[in-house]
Image (cartoon, rainbow, N blue to C red; front, side):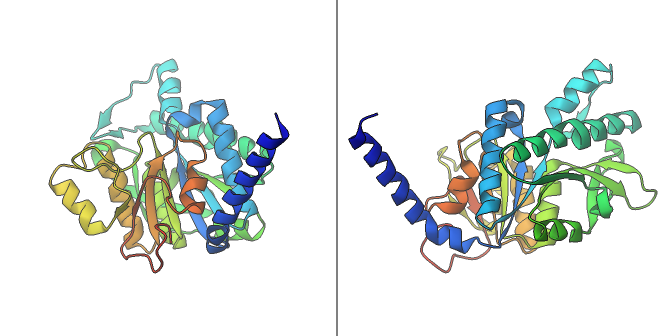
Length: 297
């Protein structure tokens, strides 16, 4: 590379860092809950990139919590074991045999893979499930779904303790039952929203396989209020699999999360773009207008 080109690259890098500084300062000490899932979980390069972003967030003073899913991995093992998968309204029907597989895959295989990726990137990560320290206590969401839980009690002190030690928590969405200490499978988005609400997080980032919430013209809407989201659901603009995601975002904002963002987890450095640039990434949902001009304030 020519010296002139190198100088140009360094200048661009310095300019980027300078522009990011107000946002780095803004998020120092902030709690950011990130729901990680989708195609990125099955790709080694995407996993490594995600882990590097999480480590950088921690190194600049953010307290990230990673909550993950693992549906494709669960489906694969169930198929190999000859256990049939059945879904009702997009939720997995989870009998006793299935919930054992769910816990094995989420708390074991998937959770430890993410932990290892973060550690390999220079961070300090610890894997947990919602059962640890009774972090997530559930009731049955619907009798027809079996061991699928709805969070009714949250105990997140263990996450605050890990923040204080400089450790990044990685949480599998497996929970304890309130009545009989049964094991429950919890939707990953639901678990992330419940944890964000309990922590009064500054941001809930829901990484998906789409660019964000789209309007009737197919364009991504970058800023939304809860009232606008509900109107888009009522008129059918928001439909299908996007509905439970925006409902999770709305519930989190109602619980005191400063803002929830639905963004494309396939995009390189999506989390960093969202937090540390003026234009952000995806669709941000919050109950009040920002106090300052930048979209991400």
